[in-house]
Image (tube, rainbow, N blue to C red; front, side, top):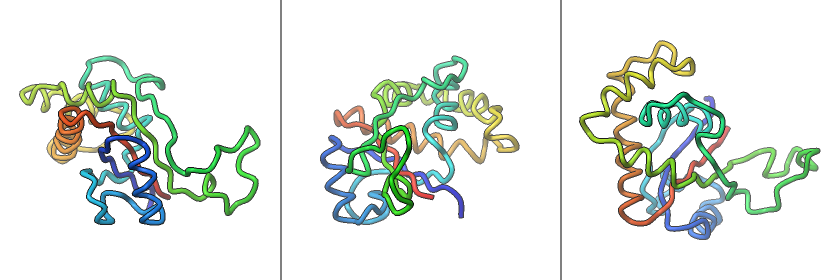
Length: 163
């Protein structure tokens, strides 16, 4: 099945944790909790979303382009030796991170007329090798729309990841 990634917006991390507690870690986008979001299989925040942000901003991708803070699991993050057991939620997931507002604002700020060119740059990234701009543009538009709605509402963007 691969990695599932859903992007969504919420007012704050407390709202996200409450949603995940009620859904036993299920995606807030799919569980009917009412959080506005986008399903984006295999679109990890660090690299593939980072490549979209780089394309929108017309800068080279770098590992620090998408800053994130862990929100879920709600238990303390394990130390440098990793989780104490293979059943630890930090080992099994799902995981949710809060994305820096710079990511939201970069996506929200791209003018509609610039989206096709940004997507054309995005699909040239190594991670999207073989993808066609016309196939990826609807997803880019959904993510941009989500970012715009989050910015207009004063909300943050989050990424839910499940293996």
